[in-house]
Length: 223
Length: 401
Image (cartoon, helix red, strand yellow):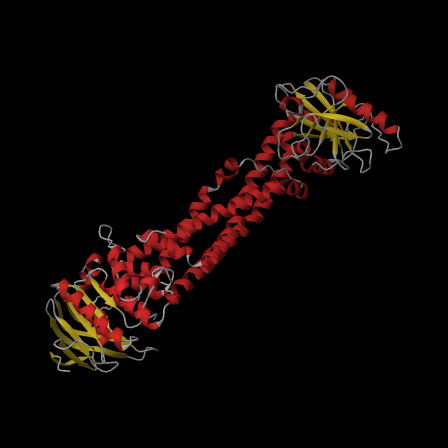
């Protein structure tokens, strides 16, 4: 999936109505289909906001965001379903089991409900024994792995991952990155990851450095 | 539950697996629907009993002693034992009146709370089978009082099956039949004894050291009067009252008029209560739903991020609220029905009004509109709550902002 941002600004009102704070400030960016991309930058630089805006979870204050040349705000619900998110804080529906939470992206896909793929993903992320537990019973690392597995579940065209290494030990960081890269490459999907720390296996990724809501550097990773 | 699920399956899971929300909402709905259904059932029960009672009396006029209207109400509507007698010669005089077709005298007695009687404080009605048009016509054609002095009829609420023995004033009777329930205490709680049987019972009471019964023969408690079709009941009532100052002549609609007025007063009192209950349910139910979903904003953001549009989410949880409310209403209404049915006699006696809670199908026939309106209100409310919550961006919802 091709991603294009033109003059994208996003500002939030300050609590108490005292003006606004700018999270994105005139971002111009083109990410071609099949690109593996890392957003770097310190906390508060606008990485998470940029992911939200690309994924249609947050509307830009000005500018345009297009996915495969279609405005995100005009895309159909089903098209939005082809964009997968792995959020910084793992969000689950507490009343659903691990397996049911994993299957959530397929909620609106009546003709495509690959339960066996869900089982394989749970196994690959070390959650096979926990498929009928509720999220409250999982540790931070397990929730993170479930979050990543869910994002991969429907082989999305665009995968947006916020802090993929958070809560994972070194072994799982490496393993998770391997799986993500393999899945994305197999599906010829576009990957955008936001992180403020180097990731194992991201050598050769396109690296976009952000600071105070602006893209200040755009090139290849040279860790 | 199957691992494969759609939006409806998701809503079902989120409902049944949130026991606190389910219990709190369910309890509220059941409570309120119990109140609302009670109001509807009471009104329809009183109306039904009044209509059925008036039809079953089968008379145009009821003659009672002047001043006996209050105890008469307790006897007729509550089935409470009452005793009063008409002045001497009234029966003969009315029978002789032109335009009077039939007169049925009845003696109101009561059983004694002593060992001589099966049960104390029962209303015993002595009637003349040869002139009766109030009791016997309503029996099944195959049931006929046997010749002799042993047969009695019992009201629908008296727990005695045909063939059972009942003992009053040292005399044992056999229950010939049980009347169908009417909702009027007079028909439901009383025991109807032919005058021959009353006479025998009176004689039996004198021996054996029990409580002695004295029947005021020739001074019946009431006279039920049927008129020729050409006679206007109201005119005849006025004429009889003028001729006999010691009596009160009630037309059957007049007998129930006061009842209707009381019912309307009761209904007027119930309506604000029902409206308050309704408002409480809508506000409290809405507050519960709002607080729950406000706490679960990330779940809504998650659904949105997986391609569920706002309209779909609003429809989904509107439908959930509708089904939950409908289930709560049915449960509450069924509860109200069973409680009212169980305590109908008690309510009737306490309120001094006829009350008939019929079969489940009949009693609940007036309720579906109530269920639909209520569940619809709750569904609209849920949609509004969702609309308010979904005004925020999915990213904000996910962060719980």
